[in-house]
Length: 119
Length: 296
Image 1 (cartoon, one colour):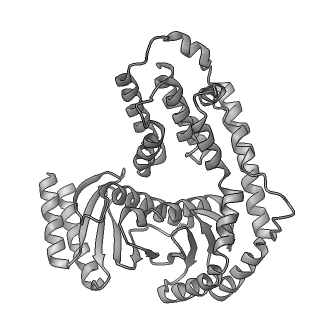
Image 2 (cartoon, one colour; image 1 turned 90 degrees about the horizontal axis):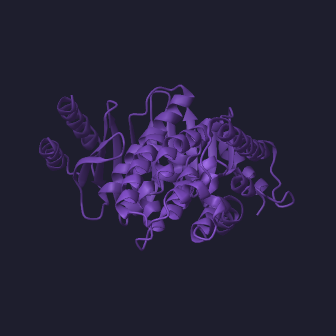
Image 3 (cartoon, rainbow over the protein chains, first blue to last red; image 1 turned 30 degrees about the vertical axis):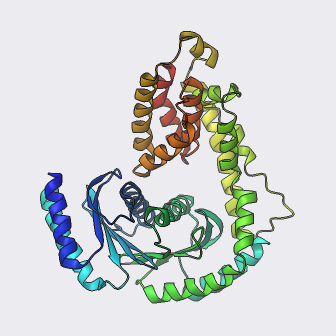
């Protein structure tokens, strides 16, 4: 099954021009990943699940619905974390010159595929 | 540096964009904040979000985080990193406006940059002691036999009370800030009292001597490993996803030279307990791990 997830992530990277992607369970464990060597898989996975979960708690306190996506901009690129239902988180690493519109569209397409796989 | 200066710096963005919440954070701890409506839970969650997000620079080499942004139909959140340790957090209710939040944060960041050293000193002096104290405990854990007992009986309050011993003449907060600090201090004290009474009421734990007498022989490392695995599971259940990373990091610090023994495990568990901000969850964690600890 993890092979299938990896294939989906690889396909996403090919189509979107992202640097890497990681599929993370809600408890912060990496399910599958295709990441550059500069990224620490465990840390990215744990951090992504944690900040998305804390962000959800913030919006829940505000009674403003769900927080489905957040992104962090760095000097060398972007990291985008998107929730997949309540079962997983997709983390995407993109270069600083990434076309964000295209990237976000590809993320949505990939999430649909992953949702089907995750059931 | 007086807190009042920072508060005054917050006044401008607060009046300009009327955010729901705006705060200055050092290593994920709030130094000052202003808000439309006070909510300790919100501030706690947001602080932890800031703290966790700071990890990005260690998770990805040369990332140099600039800002975090998220928006929904009726809200937006921005965390603007001044340095890898200092950040501005803004929660805005209403139609999301990324550019406005970014410009506001940039302006404030420029001002705060002047106080970078002061902010770090303030953190070291007034917000860090809990960590320092726990480090000190870690270093001295083998000689301090009282500490493991505190873990078992849930009496970890004394240590936490020490951390908020801030001289009044140095801190001259205005209304919101003093309320924040006072309420936090009160909360901590209340939580300690409740945890102590809960522990007394609910838990008849064996003393450390009783525990030690049960097994005078050399501990089996594999048994300790199994116990640590079980404790890790319980910790992740309580803390959430970041628990795995936190546990791993703490474990690496504690058990460097195969020095795992009953004392170090108990002290290790105490350090995990101190990582759990909510007192109820602390109690639950202690309750859930006591069966493993008592089998040591």
